Length: 120
Image (cartoon, rainbow, N blue to C red):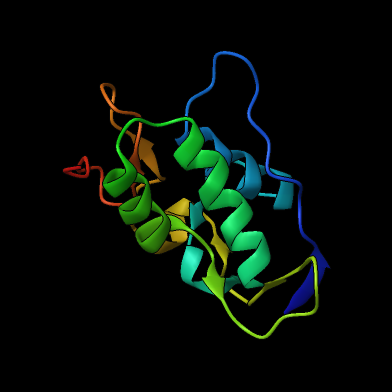
């Protein structure tokens, strides 16, 4: 387990709402090749809300953003302010799990781990 500083939510020009979560995980050290288990990433309600709000501001479907955050966002727990807990196994080499890497839907850009696109 590691306790690290929470990355600042960010969105660059040309990116969309899901990139807020992808950038968050990249900033924590995810390389987009290995399997990410968001259930093993915990943070404060404030950090979670900041991610959710930036996503919501940049996506027309509030329900889709809420579903993405529930499914792929970090968990909220009792964590020190502006910190993230990375539990063992939050990243596993893709070949060791048999899971595919997180992928994006080409139309809405939301993502999942099963290579099946989420229905928003």
